Amino acid sequence: GFEVNEVSGLCQYQSAHLKPQWLNQWIVAQGKEKKLTMIELVPSGATFRAGRTEEILRSSRSESFFSDVVEDFNGDLLVLDLGLGSSEEKSGSAPLVFPGSIYRVSYPDRPYKAPAFPEWERLTSEAVSTFLDAEEFWLRDRAGLELASRGDPAIPELKRIHRSEDAAPIA
Image 1 (cartoon, helix red, strand yellow):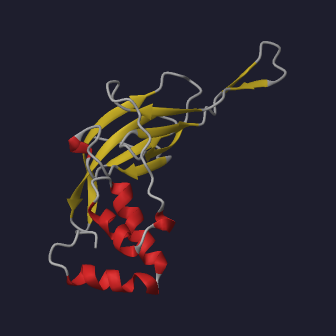
Image 2: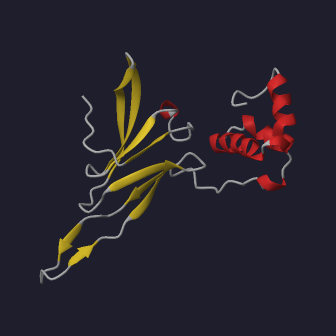
């Protein structure tokens, strides 16, 4: 069975960039275990239980402590290793503190490409609404937040979307 001794951070994986099977599954950073794991949650009555699991990354550094994980815009995973371990110097006078790191989990044949960010403040509500069915999860989410934050000026576009039969599911 799967056992989690300590969860430091987690995120729901919203793209299929790394593995299609990870879509909408939970990626868990386990601090003291120094590992990153994908956990599939399976309905179990009124709650959930851990189903299929897959270890994604494990550090061999004794000072590692995986504190969090986030999904980057392109679907890569970013793992924050605080490097909390320490050791006494030979003199025993002061501990050496190991610096932390940020790891990128990605495919080696897919180099990182920074996304183009829309200039949201320059876009009309109609233009923003076109991002509601974007392929990238972060664009869909941001478009919804952008329309909601505009308040009254966005209402005509929101009404149009509501009446539309071909509106994006997020709308």
